[in-house]
Length: 538
Ligand SMILES: C[S@@+](CC[C@H](N)C(=O)[O-])C[C@H]1O[C@@H](n2cnc3c(N)ncnc32)[C@H](O)[C@@H]1O
Image 1: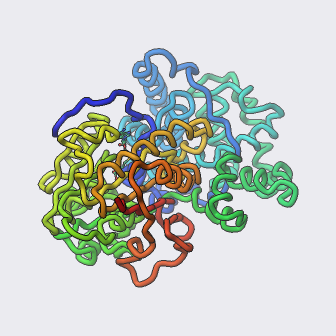
Image 2: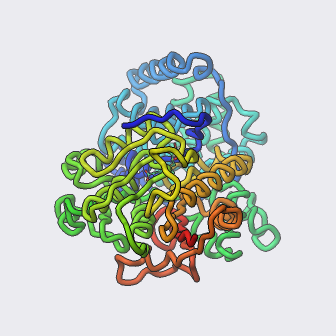
Image 3: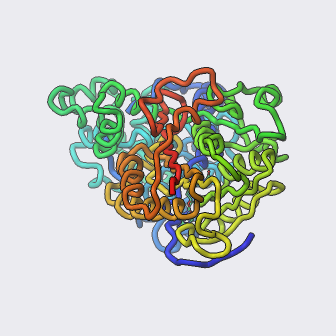
């Protein structure tokens, strides 16, 4: 890997490894399969779910030295389990606490906690369902907990608050019998926090369990006609600003917006990308017991399991990648370019999913990919992901076009898979909807425009730039493209991205009127990827 420290000020925290959830959780099936064994009294009902509390940081056991605080929490949980506690629920409770009180990411912290607790198999699936489900549904759950407790959730002590969320989730979203949901939650709280709040928790949970979720919502949600956004937000557990943003992109169609919100509350399926030239999607599907994808010629849908353990993934014949991400890379790779077509550039490459697919195609077509990533550890991931492919990894700021490594007008195809809010991948990151705020958007859109402008400078006249985000928010998509094109020092024209996206499939519905493409979880089963193709014309 070549390093070019270049400009400082990377926006690593906003990078959004959007396939991380795909890679790390794979929990749609786990969520479905946990009903039996140690979890015999449980069963999924449905996951529906609004506005939300982001939890507070710095609570007892999680403030100060994070590692030792986490260790304290884990030790306490170990003791509780040793006293006969329920390891799956203990693991879920610890994971929810780490997310809400310590700013952890569920997809990273939960596997670690499951390992620490020695939770496997169906119990791990149950713990995953409880953790992800509770975090996704937190907006709705908090409104119900607050109503039952007679006070806002931020006035409930954090240990009791997280336990109540977990208990309420079981009562309202699963087939866990009410008595089991209440007593295990009270036990959990007692073992984590002592007897102090157990009476309170017991009373609140009994009240919650006295009504169905629909009955609670009928009482708490605003009337749909009077306040559609408030209704959708509370009913489907999304912040109102996100509901508004989705609705705007969907042209004000509330039914579709609702379908999207519903889909966001289900775990995303795991998709593999069969690397071109190394394995065919049909062969790979046979090998891994999956099914070839509907739209990308390289996609394979997995039926649960742990993708990192598959031989094809370990051997580098396939990698985990949402089908929408594959389509975005393919749209760029298949756009018509006249003349030389050997110099490809990925300006925001980490962790390397699209670079791996583009690098595989480059190998077949006699091209070479330069993959730029500003964050050193993510540049290392790109190296790993593209080993053996004709790819040069540069640890540099993609805005610094003009030097010998990133010459002006030096590339035939350029991908800008821009850092974004990640609102298109809420299925994968259960806590993301509560962490993101509208104030994240201005710095992100500034960076997106700078990167897209740099890409237009890096591509030669006649070459093509692909601008991609995993967010359907209009300011990150249409507005960024329009503004960057308007201010570009070089003229550009928008190409119709629909043909590139749909090239490998018999027919792909719901691509709109072009020339840009917006994919959707509820329409296409993919993350909500946005794709624009721009040709430099002078
Ligand atoms: C959405 S992710 C890219 C995902 C990647 N294309 C893939 O398919 O795996 C955006 C990436 O851009 C990187 N990034 C952010 N600012 C950058 C900059 N100024 N120059 C280059 N990379 C940057 C982030 O660190 C992050 O890894």
